[in-house]
Image 1 (cartoon, protein in one colour):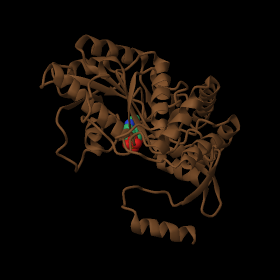
Image 2 (spheres, protein in one colour; image 1 turned 90 degrees about the vertical axis):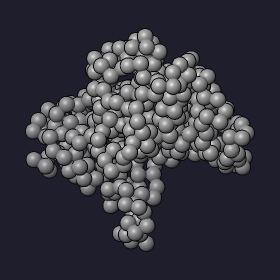
Image 3 (cartoon, helix red, strand yellow; image 1 turned 90 degrees about the horizontal axis):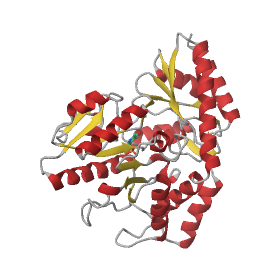
Length: 398
Ligand SMILES: Cc1ncc(COP(=O)(O)O)c(C=O)c1O
């Protein structure tokens, strides 16, 4: 079947929810995705910050094969399974948190956090139901998560939305303080805003939120769905800032490409949920947990996270140089570790398409940012090659 025929079938049968690039991928190797016709693409999207180990990783393949070999993919949370217990211990230790609830996606991890926050509020006062999130945040597509998402475009046509959410300005503590009242039970924030345009929080902002939450007995929730699992150059971005949350959510790279999400808790958030309060059929599924165990094993190696820091610095340095060469097209470069963005004066889609034609996958973030979230195994020569293509793409737009 030709790739055009495959695409036509995809258009016929898949619900039309994505503006998809006309390519069908069938395989992958290292930093490259391979389409149905055998063309290779250097991948700086990584499944949008999911494929931390790239493609065809030997360790991940072996972990999956072991689970398949033993015959247990799934056994329901009516019972424990070996993989989930190991993943729970490993992930909590890596994250410096106490307990974890496993689910299947970032949105679900955030739903769990929002529900837990409301139950926490209810314990002291049934009117303590309100949650503050940030403008330009992104927390997922389920109802609680889109409502927490501080971007109107995700709300239009889907009302009525759940009540009790308000939006403060990111990196502006005064704007958060202005919204806090006796009804506030939680504040949710991405330590590095992803979909909103790759904007790292300032350390002062997170410290200020921590103090505010401690003073008012409010839960501080970090959404590390995109910036967690090694992407910042530490296992979790909060470890770069040194400001700990009460709840941390993560997903995307959590199982190296197998769907998985997690909500981690510590101290006052540990004892809120009781049996029956929350559940997920697939949460803690043995196959997904094998992926989590392999990711945890890799992130426990400081060489792995050090390389993320080094490659991240190299990428940012090269992006700054590139932006200086094309000042009419490029603006600020920002990010941390291997989550980086370059502001553009033209539509990012134009650069994304021009890179695609030249065999490089990059994505946009927000309305004016070109996003770079490559697999965490990226090497210097991959960065050189990718930026040479971005340069050609920019030159073609002059
Ligand atoms: C910070 C953040 N939170 C939540 C989500 C939602 O994750 P999922 O698509 O797995 O539901 C995303 C997805 O991009 C995200 O970047």
